[in-house]
Length: 234
Image (cartoon, rainbow, N blue to C red; front, side):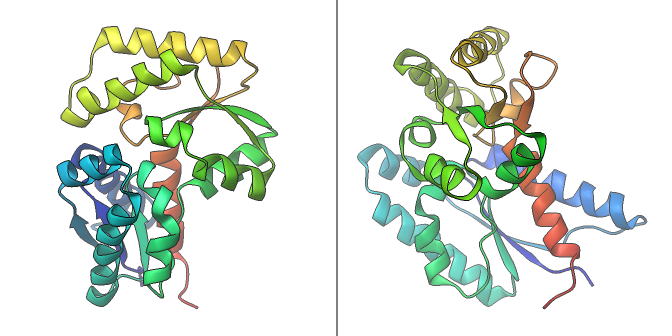
């Protein structure tokens, strides 16, 4: 029996499509045959969410996502997977709205970094992920791992590429080269690994592009979700 996952997606739909593929492929790989992941998807309209992020109206954005979570629970989801790093800023509001668990995106990364003995990692993501405290606080409190973020100019670059290119499905060699330089500067600042802390960044760079070990939140989060789905119900 495979437990049903509720996906909060659309933030952006590009990353949601990646999650859908990873989840189904992982279940098929583990169980064989025609097995796939039982999923319920609520795909949000990203433009509205992005406007609220820009305006700093996180409480309102959180209420929208929480309503989606409630609907997924009512539809039969046994756990929630939010296919966005940035919107984990409102993870508490989502978890408070439902009885089923929200599988938090930070935790699988912390587990793997801890096993690898990495105590200081560079974080790439949207401006909100890099600058707001939700990623850093959870990583520090739960795993005692320090995060390094790019300087202001590099944060602006990374944020712009995510929203103006990757969220629109645009993958540019020029942006790839600029991201590689950002990672090199993170290494110079003491990072021993780099976290791809935006679900779309895997479209642009990976282990083949940089010298630091790469930890992809999308892949690790999806793997953790599959582990939950295949575990016995309590």
